[in-house]
Structures are given as C-alpha cells and as structure tokens.
Image (cartoon, rainbow, N blue to C red; front, top):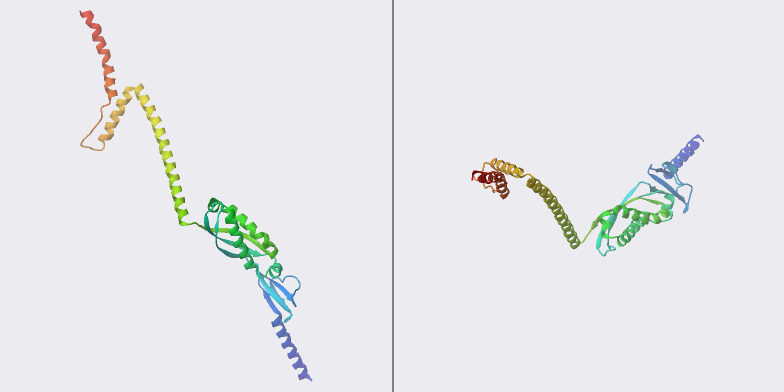
Length: 267
C-alpha cells in the first residue's frame, strides 16, 4: 500500500514538473507577452518576469518594445523643380501597444518600412531641391507625421525620421559647382571694387592734405628714400615730383620781389 502511494506521489510530482516546464514562460524586461487562448486574445498583456500558460491551449507571443532602427532604401524621384534625385532615410520607432501590434497588422516592421518608402517618395515630389539640401529638419518633421498617422493604429509610435543622403546626377553637381564658383567670383569682385573705392577716397584725402601743406610731400619723399635705402639696393631710382619744383619756385618768389623793389631806388 505504501509503495503504491509513493509511486502515485512520484507520478504526480513528475506530471506536475512536466506541466510546469511546458507551461513556464519568461518575459524579458524589454518585452511584453500577448496570450491567445484557442485563437482569442486572453487577459491582459503579460508583464516582464515569470508567467504560466496552459500548454496546448494558450499561445504566447512576445513583442519587443525597444526602439527599432530601420533604414529606408534609397528612393528615386523628381522634385517639384524637375530634378531627379535619390534620397535615403532612417526611421526610429517602437511598439507602444503590444496587442495592437500583433492583432491589427500582420507584420508591423514590414508595414512601417513600406509606409516609410511611400512617404519618402511623396516628400521628394512635393519639395524643391534647395529644401532637400538645406531645409531637412522641416522635411524630417513632415515625413514623421506622414508615417506616424497610420502607425498609431498598429500600436507603433514613430520616434524620429532622418533623411540621410541626397544623391544628385553628375550634370547637376557640375552645374551647382559652376554656380557656386560664379557667385564666389562675383563677391570677390565686389569686395575688390569696394576696397578700391575706399583706397581712392583715402588717397584723395591724402592728396588734398599734401596740397594744403607742401612740406608734407617733401617729408613723404624723404620717408620713401629711407624705406628704399633700407633694402641695401645698389641702384636707387627716385622720381622727382613736379610739386617739389613748384614749392621751391614759390619759395624763391619773395627774393625776386625784393630785388625788383630795390632796383628803382638804386636807379
């Protein structure tokens, strides 16, 4: 009798252990468990930790809640200003409703990928080339809204969308390079012309100052001689300004006037 009891207890323990092994499930911290009992959603979403299901009756689906990084393949399109470009992007999203992600859509990853590609082609057709190259932040926000609208019903939240690269045809690259070069040359000419204008004004002021004070021109000539002589040149060519001759001529005029005034008295 005792042997039968021990055998029954051992069999019960073995059956219980087998049942626990078959029913035991572990949900990780970054996951949530969705249980289907005979094909129907059963109970609430299972939280992280140890949980039990009915073997053969319940079916547990684990859903990852981590942020998923999904690259969007490069899409070729024509911009609003008729330029052919290839644009690729990256989408960051996560599941916020595990039940909806399993029930409402067959494969939420594939659905988000297709929606991202379609939205990216739509953004290309609505934008100008300058916007794709310099105003990407605004385009990223518009692309995020376009993807996030249908993804809400799938239990998915779009965290961020970034346009990675914009590929242009070689002919367009050369045209843009010529345009940038022409613009830089134009700015350089404007700067040189402005510098010439400022220099001419300063030279005119200097000339006016020297004409009012002729001795300043002589001092400037002496400074030039000193500067050239400092180079230890064997030959020194120095122009003799006409203004200096005029200065010397005016300096001698009083003596001639005095001589002319004394001649009548002597006579």
